[in-house]
Length: 291
Image 1 (tube, rainbow, N blue to C red):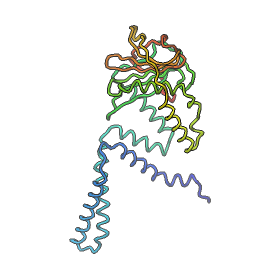
Image 2: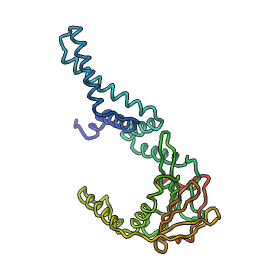
Image 3: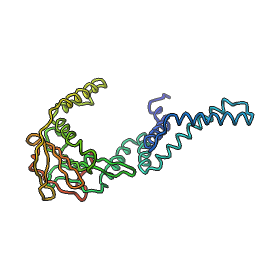
Image 4: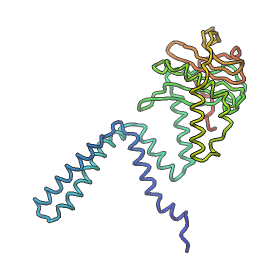
């Protein structure tokens, strides 16, 4: 009887699941102990263990000291691990981590479902196109806190992977500190969309070639010319709204401020004057990004 890779995989499965669960707990902690706390806890445990061995006259103070040091370090880790278990999101991440080793496809589906549920739970109305005949996708979101509170939602219209379009990406976000970097981020996106760097498939590169490619892209982006911004207008919920935009023809980026929200747009193959935005009361028309 031969010992195959499948047998090794099944034998190591419990260890791999435990490893991923511990990594998940460590990553979800709201407080991370400084290294000296581990050292202090281990030293305290070793002292207590050695003292207990001397008092009990067990004759094994070194063994008792080692056990005490281990228990001290584990106690320190457990106290801070408890900060992770108090967060609702941790239990989802633990379930997904366990499924990742047992049923990777189910784990991926679970994360997509979670991603969509969080994105659709925003307390503000995301903006999308009033008229679009092609596909609509829930392209992404940002959140903070636990349980997560949605701070931005990105809605895609068209095949976003198509270099020449047509597509429009509308990102609605709460106004905040990131607004001061909005123009720079949109200028980078404008350059990225037109860059020939998108013609390179990173999956076909080895590690050294991939690093060289990414370095070249960063250098080219740093040297990109600054786009010229223009003032314009577009229709939002049937009303004209002031918009700042940059680009050329039907390849452009823009942003518009709407009360407490900031809306950033990127487009390829769609003229700015053809865009009509509406506040969406639900996102049922937008499919999952992976659908």
